[in-house]
Amino acid sequence: MQKALEIFQEITQALLADEQLNPVAKYIPSAQIYDKLDLSLSHEGTDMDSFKKSLKDLVLATPRTATNAFFNQLFGGRNETAVLGDLLAVILNNSMYTYKAGGPMIAIEKEIIRNITDLLGWDDKSDGTLAAGGSMTNFKGILMARDAFDPKIRHKGGRADLVLYTSEESHYSIPKNTAFAGIGRDNVRKIPADSMGRMDVKLLRQAIIKDKSDGLHPIMVNATAGTTVLAAFDPFEEIAEVCAEYNIWMHIDGAYCGSAIFSDKYRHLLKGANLADSFTLNAHKMLGTPLSCSIIVVKDKKHLHGSFSNDASYLYQTDADDFNPGKISLQCGRRNDALKFWALWKSIGTKGLGELVDKQFHLGEVSRNYILNNPDYKLYSFDDSIGICYNYKDISARDICTALYEKSELMVGYGSFHGTEFIRFVTINYGNDEADILRYFKQVEEFVEKEMQ
Ligand SMILES: *Cc1c(COP(=O)(O)O)cnc(C)c1O
Image (cartoon, rainbow, N blue to C red; front, side, top):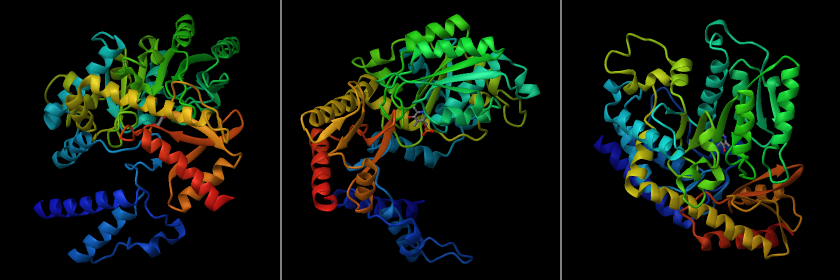
């Protein structure tokens, strides 16, 4: 291992130094990637020096997500404590299915889950688990909703009369997972959003009434905490009321902004989340842990066992179910995604996690103020959001974002809402400060002036 750790040190140092000078990796068109880098695999392998060079070139050419020039997706930055936890998880290489194989790592995962269910105000009937990303934790929510409605589906297979509701602004993993669950994409009702991007609960209720009168069975409403484009929060209390009235499973997809639960200042955005049956959040988004770290908690743990448990005498040989989370897992072998989050939480506490969240909302506010005070800009997003959607001088958002990327200037993307396309600037990297945000706007302005007009 010594040699590998030395190479790791050397390459990491080179990357960190280069990130200071070049926050955006040089753009390489995909058509040229095999010519620009030595990526080929061979029968014979390669000698140490050329191996090291290939590896270093590869690392230095890879898009940089930790710098103050990355605003492209719903993650960014590099939290050193969480990275340390993740590096140790790689060295240890446990599989998180049994206490026998994971030992205390199983206990820290349980500690994370217990603290999140406490924040939701749930009792010890609740439980949860981690899966390989928000798409997969949402999938688990859908499977539990389906099986709670009709436990026979596990054995007999799917049926075509179940319906799931989600807002038109929700994440694409919902219809995709509904297909996986054997419910079918056509049985997803995309409920229109109001002018601020939140699910219109009146239309939700109408859709449910219509489906029931057609003899169909509503099984789940997916509400979103942080919609993908506007980062809006659905009205959870009102949705919960509808779900209670019609006895429908309520899931909250908080992959993006569910971590507002950690903030005393912004927890109110999640008012009513305690009424949900299941809730997901991605620590690799607002909390800045390395990808991926996604958690689902469920109010009644019997559903986790109902949908996911399978006996396997070659695997579960010791300890009670409680400490054998393989029994509530999608996977068999499962990576230790808990340690990086536990390391971060252990070091800064719940209060510290809340401050990370507050910082992002603050940077969002700084961005909105800048936009509102500048007549060349038009703002499309709202207060209490970290997704800052805007247009500049009526120039195509798509053109600006693509040009910034191809000139290795900045990484930022575009989105649309109710038919208008705009730049989606995400203030999720809490390593940034106000100066970084203002520098971003200046940089785009200068770039447009120089390259696009
Ligand atoms: C990112 C995101 C997901 C998917 O999470 P992954 O970890 O990328 O699979 C789901 N829902 C919302 C609202 C998201 O923002």
